[in-house]
Length: 238
Image (cartoon, helix red, strand yellow):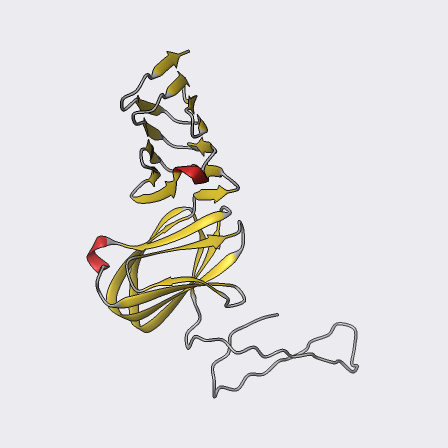
C-alpha cells in the first residue's frame, strides 16, 4: 500500500489475518515529497482545460499523458503576467521543463504520470494542457480527440501547426512526413501552402498533401480546406 503522510502526525498500521495468530514482518519505505499538500489528481489529458487553480505559494497537479510527444501547458490569457512559475517533473521528480512566462513544453511518454508545480500567488489560474503533437525522427504526428477538433498546417518559412488554440512552429528541415488523425467529433483541417508546388489529393474525410519538403496524410476530418498559396499547385478530388 502507499499513502501520503504529514510531518508531525502519528499513524497506526493494523495487520489482520484470517489464518490465526502468528508473527508478521512489515517493511516500511518512507519517501520525502516536496509538497505540503498532495497533488491535485487531474488524470489523462489530451486537449484539456484545468480551470480555477488557486495558487498561494505553490500548488501541485498530477496528470497522465495520453500520447507520447509534447505536453504543452499554457496559461489562459487572463492569467498571463500574474507572477507565477510552472515546473514539470516526471514521477521521479526529474525536471522536464519550466517557465516564468505563459507556456512550457515537455517531452512525455504515453500513459506515464507527470507532476506540475505552479508557484506564486494567483487567485484563480486557468491552465490549458495539450498532449496531441509529437515530432520524432522527422515524423510529425497529430492525434485527434473525442471532441470536435480544429487543426491547421501552414507551410511557409517554417512549418506551423495549430491544434485548437495552441500553435507549434518547426523548422522545415525537421519534418519529412506528417500523419494527422481527426478522431471522433466534427473535425476540421486547413492546409496552407506557399510559393512552392503543392499537390493535394482529397477524398471524403481524408487525403494527402505532397511537396518537395514533406508528405502528409490525414484521415478522419469532416471538413478539409486546401489553400495553395501560390506556385504551380494541383488539386485532385476523388
